[in-house]
Length: 257
Ligand SMILES: [Fe+2]
Image (tube, rainbow, N blue to C red):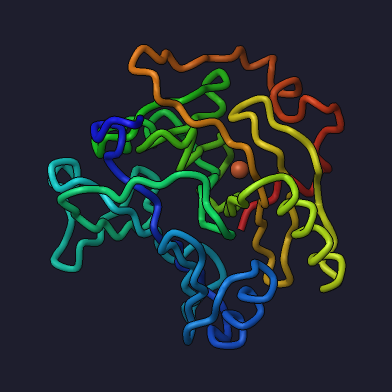
């Protein structure tokens, strides 16, 4: 049984800048097996991807937070603020956070962002009640705001950017079915399938026609023990942590959008 105190927030939405939001929403609804609603793609557990006309890239991130945590972030009248890298956040202050189990259909699960300073991002999000789940030297930070191993992750890079959007699937059968759907749509896989050591999840990555990278994943760890202490791996463990099955990412995997 998960205690209420473990649920201080959840990732709700990501907005992406594209040239033609309606056309892009139709494309992503098919690619991700979601439902189009105008320029939004509805995914499981009331999560969504919103397409907005604008420069290609991350437009904003929507996060639900308990009111007491939201109050620690200074937001403007529209509830927008910016994190330590200037990523635009829309904070939804809530009296309680809907507790979720394993999703029954594709669901927005996490974002991995490149950051010039992952530690500053960690400190920023800790103000909002996030907790460290795992670390790799000072190179990578994985943060959770509920028992799901991570909702946000930050990898060190020269500039801030979006590395990938994680879509959680119910189970490994759904992951294989998703790979078959990608093949039918002519969408090649960039990396995977494999299994991450950090978080324990099965993964498949692909870069879509707009240049955004997605991860389909399942079997991600849940952290419920109050005595949990975040493992901190040495920076030299990077290659061993990325894929316990062996193959390393291609060079293209360093690119961000
Ligand atoms: Fe991921």
